[in-house]
Length: 79
Length: 158
Image (cartoon, rainbow over all chains, first blue to last red):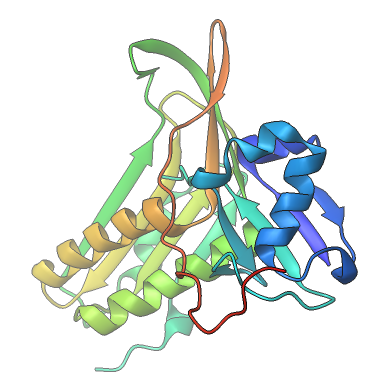
């Protein structure tokens, strides 16, 4: 799976893109927990993060499949 | 009248936005009005002097969400064509970051659709701006897009 971080989440994770194995996380929530454990600063922002799976906003309990593109998105500020 | 979305323009660009060119592209003989929105960089934010902004996007998803907004306004309002352009990268004070033009036979639909489009873009399109001040930089406060609620049938995380 491809995992993408944007905005301040990218700064906190130290990179914009990572890859994770499906065996590491079965849901988006578990995937975020994996990174929150690795980068504790990320955990603080859990309540102000929205996730997407394959470029659609997705619920935290969404199951993951290998090949998925998951992104963690902070509040958007375009315009 | 059915308008095909392929008449519309949805773009993410890294160069200055040519507003006049986009207005020409949405202007058709069936139309009687074009309403535009020009969003540009302000020189202050929360009482701090802004030097410049830097925009980034989840580009493929941002473009898809912009097209979704276009489909929504075609469904909701009697409009003809839409041009929706967002610029990315470093923008100086006064430069246009987002431009929307909506043409329609009558002005009311164009006003309503343009307003809906910019409001929805700011809430749902994955684009972020970093504000640079004399004494540092911060990611701008934004809006959290509405995400689907957890699915009741899903098994709890093991």
